[in-house]
Image (tube, rainbow, N blue to C red; front, side, top):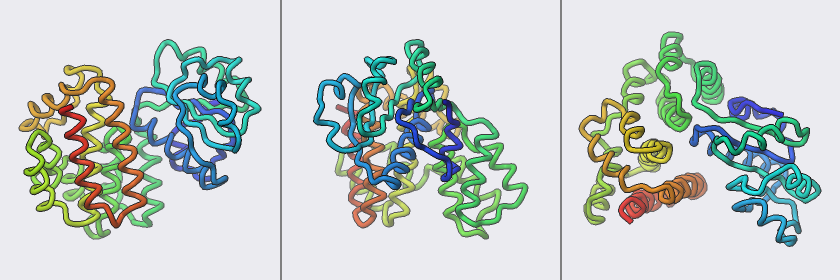
Length: 312
């Protein structure tokens, strides 16, 4: 069967009861979000632990992995076939496969579409209807009333990339209700980089300078979260861009002063570095949610780790 990724995000009553999930597509930030939501739903429902596996050969060769029910997060569909799924079917646990689109996975997608105990989730850039669904969910959860003209403005202006859309909606709905107006929303959607967010562009500086600037600008948990989501947005631009030309086209026009610096940062990234950067983003977000009392330290460590990955 096939599931709409947005339905998974906005409908907590949606049944997630399959044995196998294949999360695919070309929108990496939405892929990561869907993966995270599915894992959290299963953990909440059955208290399952998670185990990362590179590919299914690692399962089939190690019987002791199946001593208790787990969520197996599979980083590649290498070796996956109809026979492979059949061998896994009687094993304890839930299997989540994550793979970007390519010609090689068409046959695997068809297997998941036809299998009654499997689910295919394709993640692409969000269209207008998808943005409306996510926006409505934020409104419902916040309990805040949004005027019609503001609502329509958001539908038109919110980004098609999930990470940017989510980041901006979090910032908007963190505002006091009286401050949710077109003027403030425009500021959020265009991002004022004169403040704490500008720390991202300091990663080529010496650690001492970065630490000093960080301590001057990052004071509260809110500051750390804002810095994280800003950095995450630009990290995803790096991760999702195929080459320098592609990356350059995606740089927002309001960052014309930082354009050359951003290109210099991108030039430092290989495919392997992008994978390391993605792991850093995911681990940092997870820790920030659990250890809010340590957020100031974690925020600085996160920034310095971006620098370390970039210049290594």
